[in-house]
Length: 504
Image 1 (cartoon, one colour):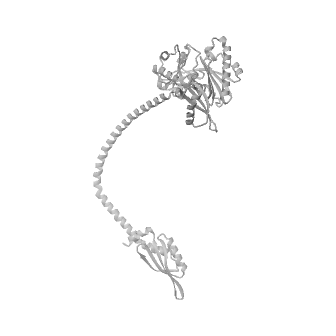
Image 2 (image 1 turned 90 degrees about the vertical axis):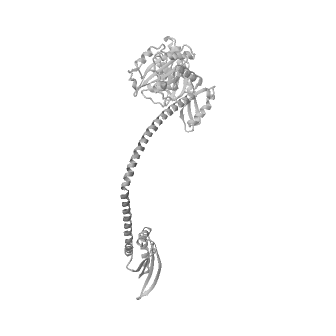
Image 3 (image 1 turned 90 degrees about the horizontal axis):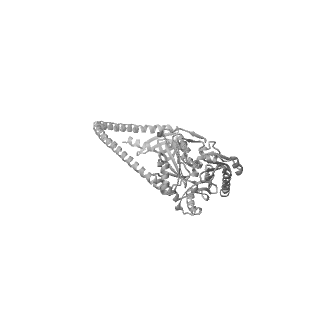
């Protein structure tokens, strides 16, 4: 065994992850202590089931758990692979919601049970451009899970999660694969166990095919029968590979990895295996590259049966709840959700009461403080109110004076503007206001064109708008032709107000 030993860390910095598996012959338990930086197997136990009655199994669990502290919040029930049914489906959709509905319709076709009689979960393996998805469906009869829950509840245990051993086998391989090999290539994972073996084919860390083989280590009576036992094992492998090639149109298997207890895999002839199945074979001990406490190693050495495999349980425990397939019953999910929401509401109620009390005290304190400040402000306001009134009067007088000054300068500005734009050919005879909004300009020009030019220049001025020629008249004086004219110039809007001020 390639095992790393580590001393326990302080109890303040870890939590216990527990995985328990129940089958027809054995109870198995793995417990992992998790700290911030590492996960260590701290407990490993197994207990023979002498009777299949619920009371007997519950008593065996109680015996198994002696001296072990379990927090149900971190307890996972592992369903053995031979109790689960796996189907590969190809469905005409890539929408997860639609796929879920399609799978419910497939239950009756894939099993002799109705949807209400089973617990199922699935994983989308792949989707293509044609809108089809390859789906791995996992089905377990509801009575099996319900029975396990009843047995565990009799031992005052209530699992938080329900997984199955094949899911753990994938996690286990990720832990021991320190080379981080190319996951896009198909590989076969085989877990040799006491009564049955688990054969799974994975691509991209997903199960694409699975089969439970009714062939285990207990069929090996003694080492003298090893060659005969191994030949039967090879026949089972070949049949499974043949089923994969027929049922799952996927990639060719690139490598095979076999794991299990040392008592079984230690006697395997890898050369014979590679020759028989024409594939590279890697035989790996179940504890390879797995951190274990010395106490766990001692417990394993004291086991009555060394032919039990813990690879799947190790993978589930080391994954700490991060499982792809969940087989927990829907009613238990709903119950947990209701309990969690109830706890959340209770905590929120207490928090709300505390917040209201805190805000009330703060609010009352601020009201008292504000009333005192308000009294002080009123007193101060009465003292400065007279001075404020005097300042307001001064401001109004100042603004009025400024307005008068600007208004009186308007006439000068208008004269300046007319003088600025007038040409030497034009002589202004008179300027006069018509009402408050317009100015009349009467004059004489030597040329008619100068009158129109003068009109345009006044139109462009910022002081005037809508400048119009009221009339033009030609006459002869001193043998010269002169043009008399009158222009009406409306003041720009901003200067109309000043004009009204000037005429007050």
